[in-house]
Length: 298
Image 1 (cartoon, rainbow, N blue to C red):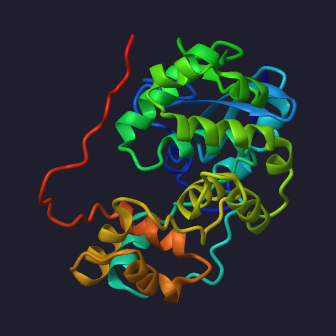
Image 2: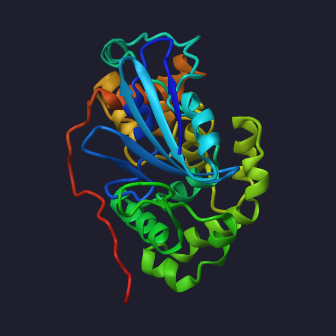
Image 3: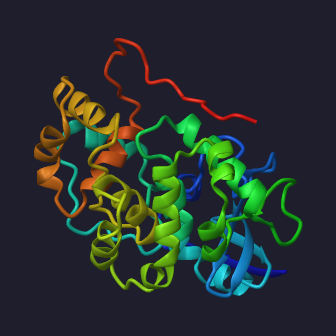
């Protein structure tokens, strides 16, 4: 076990930064325990790691286990948003002014790990979260490794790329992921070394979108987490455009309309959209909700 304590230079909401990596209830790679600690697993360049993060006395405390423990602790400040740069961002709309005042410590963290962000993002393509998270849980429980150290029961480390490539088709079916998403993940796993070596968000965007099955939305969701890209707005999200439009104008809008509204925040469009979602403003619900599908057979 290794330890590290670190004092942020300014306001920092560690919980919100880490929550960006949680994939629904029961995520085998993310857990918050009753003592307030957040546990997270990662497949670092040095191997699997379990990271436990707490905040006390104005300091962020990390403990880590496994071959990747040192890497995980070295990366801890970046993970919780210490490197996030707000320069060039000015909250112009009253809704954003309110959000900045209420969430002064919100920062966008970065993991530096592509596959652990890409696989769940692909699973979330064009389905409700409940369906995607069910698949994520199944795949990690069957093909992930036990989390190193004294992690909470059931925690797992995401598989190596070779494992993602070799998962049999019937297990994808049992997970609830159809052949298209399974094939997208397997293809990305073949190119994982190149993806993980991307030096910038722009380079990763180009590499990701060159792969079949990966478009604008998936690339943005990955780059938000891997590089903490404040401009990688999730165009194509089922809810986001409606939420942004309603919050800023009182009316729902579509993706082109959302991009027009966010244009004054270019360079920080994801940040602006994230702050808007934190206000809790939502358009009134009308019509049936998209339901989770379950076509698995056992």
